[in-house]
Amino acid sequence: MGNTAAFFDIDGTLYRDSLMVEHFKKMIKYDIIDQKLWFEHARDTFMNWDKRQGNYDDYLDEICELYVRSLIGLDKTCVDFTSDQVIKLKAERVYKYTRSKIKWHLDNGHIVIFISGSPDFLVEKMAQKYGVTDFKGSSYLFENGVFNGTVIPMWDSKSKNVAINDFVEQYDIDLSKSYAYGDTNGDITMLRRVSHPIAINPTKELMAHISNDPIISKTAEIIVERKDIIYSLTSNVNILDI
Image (cartoon, rainbow, N blue to C red):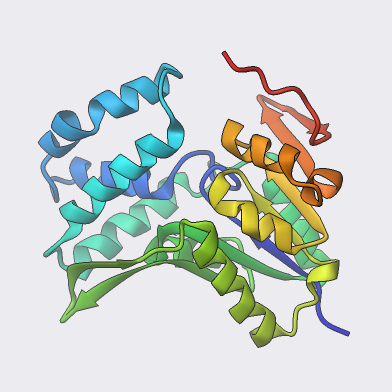
């Protein structure tokens, strides 16, 4: 009989924003990269999202492309220093519900795994911070201590599915007893794989996906955390097209 596991996305599921974006801002703050990159290329997309006039996935895609370009040629010492600052100053900025569920799973002897599209050097530090069993993030490749521009992504559902297969084999996980927590379409396969899928503050796209899925629509729990209140909803809530 296999082990029970809980798979957690990080950005938007545990952390209340994007670790990658926080790291980007820290590198600008410390003059490691030029702030003009943000103002000239990402500001309009960010402002549209901030005013709820744009798509969050579009915003993150554009920021990710700019972020990767900005890191090319940087020494890993600079990357690690700013990563440490992000974790030191921002790692507690998480959803209360998700933090409590991580503790609950660990207290019950479950295997807890972070699977995130954020850079692996940030995901690793969050995994250490919250004492989880293992992790998988997007791999940023360094040659001779310098980032070479190559990224092996972990932000799409296909990549997360492969990661789950590897973890199932490594830890003898029984998915029929396991849990998954996510917030965007990139987490849909992860949610489908387990008997206890939980969508936390899901995007409109993920909610539509869940509602139209004949299997997950019957099992998914929808969690919405706002201010100091946590709401638990069914997957057949109305989606307003505004």
